[in-house]
Image 1 (cartoon, rainbow, N blue to C red):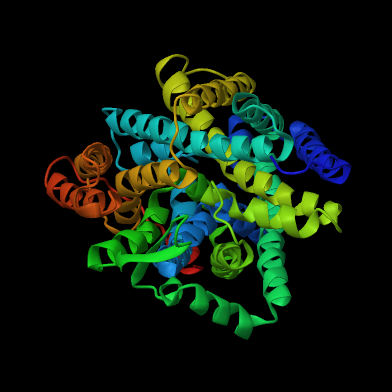
Image 2 (cartoon, rainbow, N blue to C red):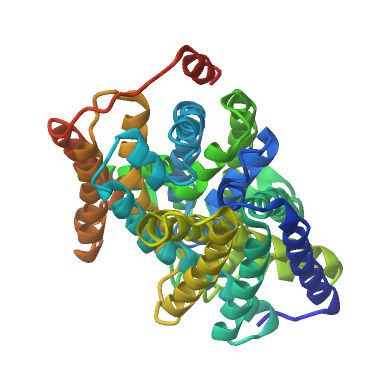
Length: 503
């Protein structure tokens, strides 16, 4: 446990109260399921961009990626590069069309409803399967955020992990329950800004203390030149603090870079595309979001390298390198700054978990409850069902964390691959291929999700990230399945074509 001070405690309390206050402020602006799920499609470009990227990166940005670099060197930059490219392409080829198509598909507020309308599926299988995939993988994904939150509270306040995770759950539930999509998007935009400046300040302080960038990178070369070799893998040991362990091969590079393909299927990111005011706002949002993610990923890599230079002894948990640097640098002379920066870690946790809870609750409400139990439910009734679903999904995720000892990165990688393979190819094909059928979409979802689950259960053969075989199987299944089933009549009116062209 790190040394706790009154400024750090006060900063955390102010931050948590502020998040709840935003939820309470937006409570009266949330009067229907559409408001709760996608904010009535009222997001401006900056809020959509920052909230999408913050909810995308999660605690992985401040814990998982810096920890990976701290533990094994610059090789993780392949992952960062893939994510930056994937995010840009997602904004470029998916955002504008998805915003337009979901509105025309009966004003769909969930991916499941969009799939059913887009492919004119009368069997309801697409809605059922896609909602089930969302619930399964998002429960795992939310658990990764709760694990990160538990680590943070445990290290800062000395709270037992179970209690620490419970605190995170309660705060996230409260403001998501109250304000829905608007509260989640606004808090995520603020949290994204906080995360950005925290990542900027900490490594630059270490570089300054070292004597500048030249001395900083010279120190890394002296410790081990392989740290800065993107093709080399390094490992840490007590006898030789950093020692080379091998060369990163083609499969390793592909596995890391393939993370970028996961973007096309992440429901919590796609929800921001659905909630933006219009497709005409997408280019501005794309520029803001791409700038944020490129710089944030670069700074996160620098945090891991800064930890290697700064600490003489190996940290017990590499994923705590950002927290360790912050407390060691600022606690003695600027504890308020330490509190603000550490709050950024909590922001990273919340910015993803709240979005995932919201999408999951929408799936429960729109795709199960209204579709199969109460078709004539009114807006007010569905709104409260959605709020209740937030609590239910959060509790299931909390229970899951009690039996999970994996790292934040391991949990995130599983859920990211699951969504990327199950939804990514289906989403892209649905926006660009008129002849795709509901059978192709169904086969693609099942094939992608099942391949990831099986591949992970086999221990990732050949050390190949499960999203790669998952995507291959999904694409083949879509192509093969679309020979079956009736081709939907996609009505692209001139107005729609003009809107899509605004991308």
